[in-house]
Length: 190
Image 1 (tube, rainbow, N blue to C red):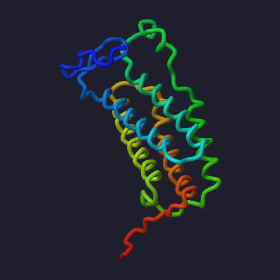
Image 2: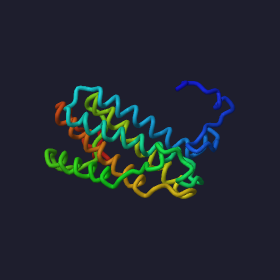
Image 3: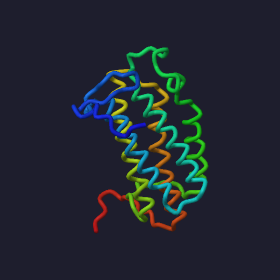
Image 4: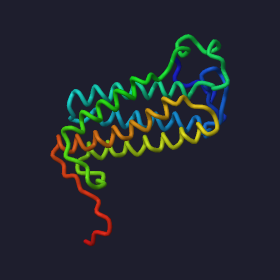
């Protein structure tokens, strides 16, 4: 597979199915933001964290590739005209169930949340908060795209749940790394 094709030199990129869109198109922004998120998840995975957290992040990275491929597919194409490797591509509800189950498991070992928490406390935790905010941007972009062109409902649900997952993972990592969680208290005077 050749890395450069020169087909994007005019400011367009190809969708699965052959249609070309400007690189600034909202559809491209959606899966580009997912790529950015996926890169941050790799950075979190490269930190000194538990093997179960690493395995969970790999699972999520794989799901984000699936979502990216779904968003990179020309929505006007009939399924039969898409190459065999992408024809059966779907995001299964089990992907969201995995996030919810993992959130619930992580939450049981954490103190109750009584305030908003300021991002930070440890570099790894900060990476998690950056990923969470990128995920929120991906969700905003994708819901905007959905208002113009249908996006699978499961994708919208997954992105919403993923930002929740990343928030709870940040809290879990804070606890494991013995990082202080600083509560945001409105109108607190210094």
